[in-house]
Length: 69
Image (cartoon, rainbow, N blue to C red):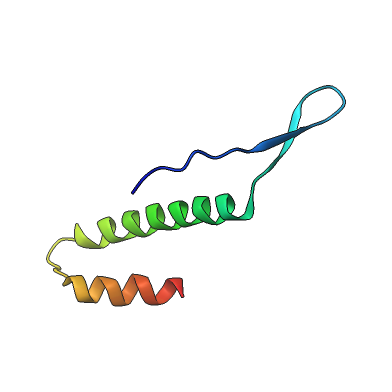
């Protein structure tokens, strides 16, 4: 997957300190999806490494993909 280069607009106060970031909605949604994917991967890794338990790909897909909908 090709990484998209975000083009944020930084909003600053009168002193020039950044106080907010403005993103295009598609950029925001892509960023949110990346964060959700990273979270799901971490959760799956924790489940997989539990001692004495094995999980099929189907089980993991059911557990994680159904929760995201």
